[in-house]
Length: 68
Image (tube, rainbow, N blue to C red; front, side, top):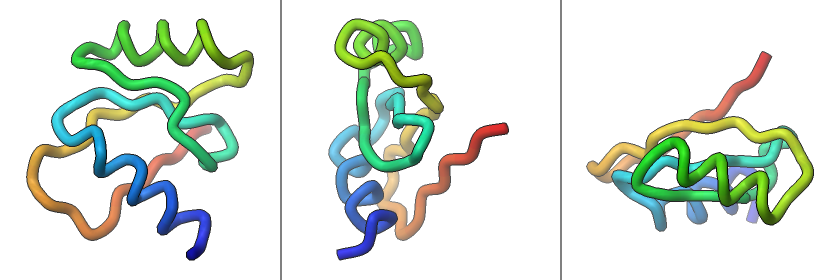
C-alpha cells in the first residue's frame, strides 16, 4: 500500500472532523470536531508542524493535503 493510500484510509476514519496531518503528509497527528481540537491534539502529542483540513462527510476517492 502506498503512503498516499494509507493516508487516505486513515483520513477517512474522521469524516466530518478536522484532521491535522504531519508536514511530511505521512500520518494523522490530530483530529477533532473543531480545528482547535485537531491543532491542540497535534501540538500535545507531536512536535512536528501540521497541515489542517476538514474531511468531507461524503465518500471520497481522493483527499489532498498541501502546504506552502
